[in-house]
Length: 434
Image 1 (cartoon, rainbow, N blue to C red):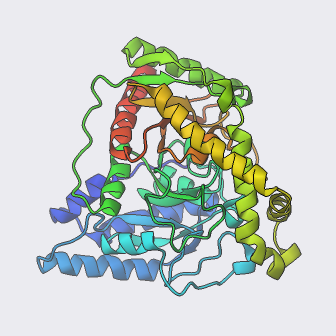
Image 2: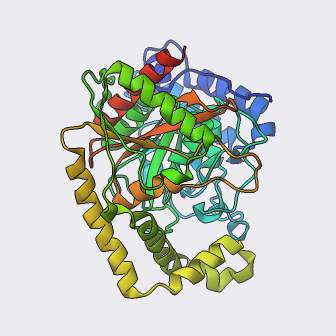
């Protein structure tokens, strides 16, 4: 097993070094390009790479810095964009052969925001078709015989291998948290509706959420601050954090590796005194997994119906089957699923009580072997349905030596607090494993 993991400077460190004139945006970019040249022929994280455009961005930023101009919060930071998100100056194929060469008329809103913050956009990363289950060519950089997960497969692999410090992804079921768990990186799925989805291929708007991946919680916070239009301040240690552990109704999907990591984590956190209690979800919430599937299928049928009419059998059977299933869902069943989701949010927030966050599984276990499938999003579906912010926290490994993450679930619009907890939790896991 050959690991293609090449640690690089964090986004926060790059921002500091560039703004202090200790390095240049071009030098940072060249470091990323060197890593891409070494790793991507094996990992295949990139769908489209525009070196010339990235060099122009970096050199223009360096010229502004030399002239004493103000620069944005993401100044000179190499950034990858999931190929589900529109870019006016690069093709956006949405992971599908039927959109090969498609050039959107405008950037997605999040792309405009990061351009305004002076990020250096390198290109587009591989995604599954329409961010569903048909995998692309990307392999897991920890072991290329294993999937990186999906649908933010290229973004997770690019961050994990050191090709970029930050990358955009998205989640409708488990497309950020699962690949982050499999690839051993941090990921933030923010509160649903906070980050604009304008210019992102719609799948199930009640669920679709733009998020991002990085190698540290603080890098995730840097992006959050940039999108929020805030000044960046370092995360503080989450002293006295109180977590509720919850295996969830989906625990039976956990495999031996996932169970091993879960037990190891609970032992470390109990010893550290940060686990307040374990929580058993009430039976009234057992239907949320199916509710997420119902909402996703029904809304996919509405949003992808035009693609089915135009492209038909040229689309994967995964997409065609889902849309057919969505059309068969009755109005009252869809309404019942949405109602159950609303009740679920209220129940979860009530059950959390005075705890700071829920600790739940991120994936069934280590990344499955093979590239023909992307793994099961089962441990993220419910939290995506409820629209709550979630963070994957890496730091532990399964019996096969591959990463297995833990998932934190927080209250709506408490992303910064959740990231501070994630940073402290990661340190505890790392110190307990050394």
